[in-house]
Length: 166
Image (cartoon, rainbow, N blue to C red; front, top):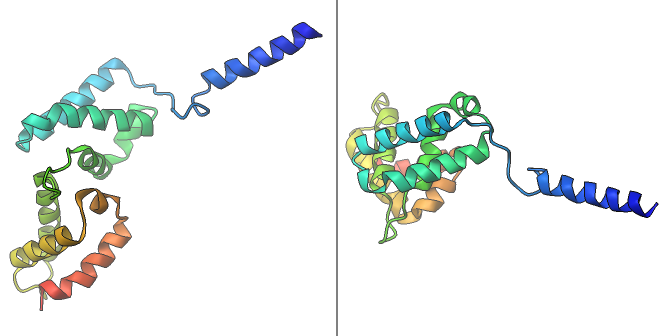
């Protein structure tokens, strides 16, 4: 009877220690080649954005977050560029002066231009987007902006757009 209790306790402890969900980490089935390819592509993309100095640290962070979020590389691929961009932006180093990272500014501006160019009610899309960035930078730190949901971001853009396009 005593041996049976020890066996049960040992089995329970073993399950706790080996269960990835219990210890807060999901098991990753990425091969070393998939990890290497992912990081190389990330580095190539950031270097092409003139972010060579921070590319290695940022891509290590991105890979780590993807390994935790997506158990298999094909799961990551299925979620596309938008999720990749969101995670990459969250891994960029914080600005020393509290401002936004240049890549975040550029991404915000480019997205604004894409959305405002077809809109005939916006007199000058370029001026509108610069104004919008200025308003958002005054209101949100980089991390706060990245933590806004898309719905909240859109509401804030709509509320601010009248100030930038009188």
